[in-house]
Amino acid sequence: MPIQSKNPYTGEVLTTYSEASSQLVENAIEKAHFTFQTWKAKPLEYRVNLLLRLAEVLEKDTEALARLMALEMGKVLADGRAEIEKCAACCRYYAQHAADFLKDKALAAPHGKAYVQYEPLGVILAVMPWNFPFWQVFRFAAPHIVSGNTALLKHASNVPQCALAIADCFTKAGFPSGVFQTLLIPSSSVPAILADERVRGVSLTGSEEAGKSVAAEAARNLKKSVLELGGSDAFVVLDATNLGHVVQMAAKSRLVNMGQSCIAAKRFIVHESVYENFVSQLKGIFKSVRIQDPLQEGSTYGPMAQAHLAEELNQQVKQSVQMGAEQIGVGYLGEAIFQPSILLGVKEGMPAWEEELFGPVASVRSFSTVEEAIHLANDSRFGLGGSVWGQVEKAESVARQIHSGAVYVNQMMASHPAIPFGGVKHSGYGKELSESGLWEFTNAKSIWVA
Ligand code: NDP
Image 1 (cartoon, rainbow, N blue to C red):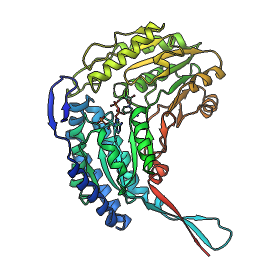
Image 2: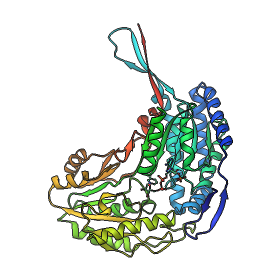
Image 3: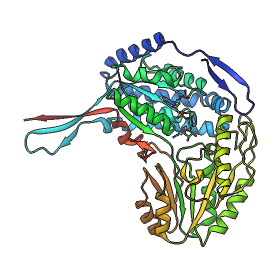
Image 4: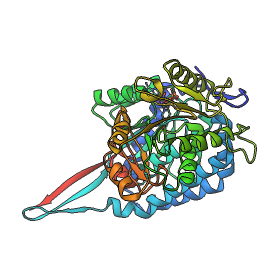
């Protein structure tokens, strides 16, 4: 089946590509494996310098790359530019810290000299999603390539132009050609790649279903896997501290990337004393959202990435309303257009509470005691990245009791190269970013000299 690049705002098919043949995939694996032998042996400084060049290429090509995201998955230009800048910053972060993260770590052995040496594993497969088509790939690639691994990218089928552009950035930066390669393949090609002995691990960002399938294949072949899956995290408002600002952040946390973010705030758990005020201000912000052509300069909100995603979100909203929730806002307008909506009266059992709503819909409910807020925040099969807002000591204490990969206090949840990122429960396992992320695809080898 051809791989299609389609503009979600106009519905226009931009271009189609043939799937890579099995011979092409074989060639790419062999090249990645062959390159690994020399790449890992290069001085770290050599790999670091190429990463710095990669950051420069990204910055130079920002406009073109942001445009590609707008075309293929509807991200507005300003957000696309910010995404590319973040990728460049991630490259620079690892260029700056790789030597420290990868240096031998002394161990307290009972005698002699003992330490850990960090070795790269080999060829790593990245299975990546369309929502942040560059960021998701660069936060994988920067640490794992600087540590000496080589990478194969299987990107989401709706962003083939972005996938090819990423490989092109590596070429422009001067990387040896087998260090990073894009494969235009369907998900059905992934098991054979994971079964190949030359491929040593896989990192997937995407849905629970994709995660289960890829993790099962990795396990069958005894390969290391890192999974970054969905989230339905809590945004807990404890009191009236800075409420106007908190509501602004609530809207931003929910509407980031048209709601298509695993760490977007999804369940708003608001103290009864500020609930009415919170809802009324949030309504005002959601109502003011204008969906425009993402390619138009100045647009702040665009379509969702694909029509079927907007339809699926609409089904979740309709079912929640049938079960008793109240919808505020018009919601689904056909094709990939979804006007932000608020769901009130959300309860256990409704899709809006139990599932991930991957689009611009905020589920809001109130609580009366702190214990209840903690219980509600933890009442999810996901746990990726939430936030707690209010008086600092109280908010920090609540944050420490929420079972999630990360909980931020009085600031919006967002990934940062220096902060470990990764979930618990059905949000996946393993870490990305920081030194924890870099170590995921290294062998922490113990050396003990008598
Ligand atoms: P998917 O999980 O289907 O896609 C993500 C990536 O996984 C794509 O590269 C996809 O390839 C690949 N993939 C899918 N199934 C398999 C499989 N069985 N084996 C190997 N690779 C696979 O996400 P969708 O685009 O379908 O979005 C659906 C939902 O997933 C969203 O509504 C959201 O809940 C969640 N999601 C979460 C993301 C996150 O950041 N955590 C990002 C994107 C989605 P292909 O495109 O070729 O199918």
